[in-house]
Image (cartoon, rainbow, N blue to C red; front, side, top):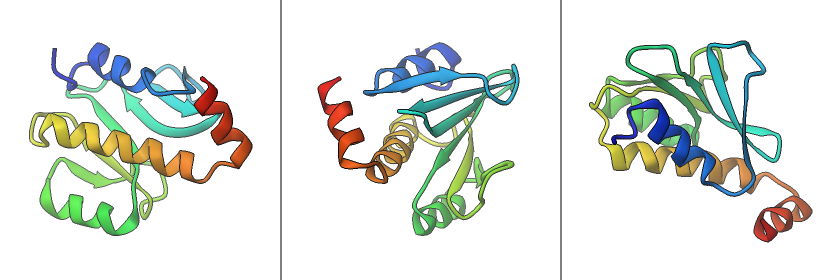
Length: 121
């Protein structure tokens, strides 16, 4: 099943070390956190689904210029977050790379102790 559908997307996000799924903003937004820090927000009741991901500011601009489905983060810091409409315009492997990069950016900002906790599993 493609990652543009909710269950494969959830499976991909939750497979990363230290990830939890929460609903802190109400029932319409699934928030995925690594050790309590958000790296993905899925508007799971949207059709098509949208996912907001943390992104390096330069890359965020490049992706927005490349794909109409990539927009500045909805209700997020528009310099550091993109919202991606999962309508098949962005190739699945590119969406996975964006998810991985968002996760990695959040982990990069963690303390040594937190990073060690992730490595232990």
